[in-house]
Image (cartoon, rainbow over all chains, first blue to last red; front, side, top):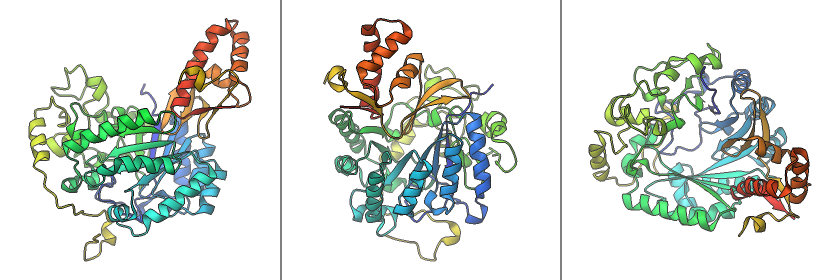
Length: 367
Length: 97
């Protein structure tokens, strides 16, 4: 029997007022008409709790863009799920937050694009976003929600890491995620503008370690390092089909948020099939579960049940083979070439902003 | 700071908002749910948090557990303090005066 998942990411919508150039949503964003209706989400959340999911992450796009966020949150709380709202803050008002508090929302994760309005609004592609976010953070503090600040870090803002940590303290955050951009979705096409230097990566690690010591018991810092400089890959999703699943806005059930970039996989939809059946028997979930699918050097590697081969999407993106060892791994035959490519990246700092195809104006939005 | 400084005997350990003990009916075990974390609780952890109601002091919790499990309080105190201090350091609990 397949062990049940612990966590589920519910991507309620791909709509978002921001257009961050590192968004992890796919390049082909779902249109509003294809989004699951409220009642389907309510049913799916019950199924998830029955399956063994403990933690629910309500995400997007911007989940507050859905007017039924409160109804969906109610269903999650009633199902007994630990409910986390992952938001940019845009679209949340004080009355909406107070209602979510009454409903029983457990935790809020607020994204941070930069430490100044100028920087944050340029990266998010949304003027006034930073100021609004600071207001939302204040309401979150007044209501008393536990707050995690999720600072997405990259070449253009990593040098402000110390100030980012200070801001987390000022906002009363209990946790800070220093999440270096992972190169999937929109980030992959903005690699040159976003890839940190080796020196920045080292500095970030040192800054985080020093802050952890200094702020023990006050602020918990989770660090997602820039994995291109790591010796071994991240165990993506803690192992494919082992701990978590994602539901896309249209109801597709994905083993990870970028899984649709892997050629040849087919995805079941909660409109057609029960969640438990998809988790245990769905073709996409079984494609890379466990270790049987592995090739060398993973197959005989002593780390095969630590790294689980790393990231399948990165294997496709960099080695053109979903079964290959994650090319970030120093043991991958592709690793030397990947490192050369990274060293040679030259960007002028300009972005391709995230946009839903139908909304795309004739002229590209610029900062 | 020593564990005794972080959690004196007269302090009242309390789980912070957004942190709660939950019976996982699918896995048949107690778990601790917290922001971005789900910890499977062993028997000791589940018992300690069962007594951690924000009203009882640390010493009272130890006393209750010692009676319940017919074990020496000194031994219970060590395990209990280690566990609760680990939660305090991870910002899942606090010691209230």
